[in-house]
Image (tube, rainbow, N blue to C red; front, side, top):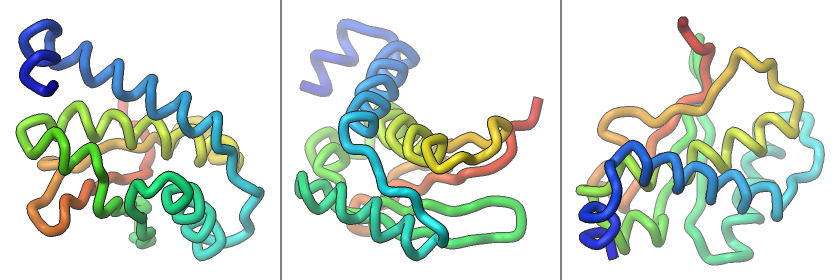
Length: 132
């Protein structure tokens, strides 16, 4: 499937497609309002567990929030060569969920490079301020 996608569309378009899919999935699985990062992580993990899509952990740093998503079936199915597309899915999903929690519009979820690590197919993202 990854070969077919990459043969038919430019990488940027595949990433945008996966981001839209992630956004739509998150909209279909809304979160309860959370008052702490622990509650938010529990809400994320409840949604992922309901569809057997791995789990996430949140780690607060000085100028960003790190999101590590582990055991993604997308990462397993498509492999590291498609990490740019797969990270687009999770950028879309987490951005919708954070926006629903009321984060400022200057904050965006972005994948780290490389987005997928070899350890348990972890996808590493950051919620941070957008720099022009």
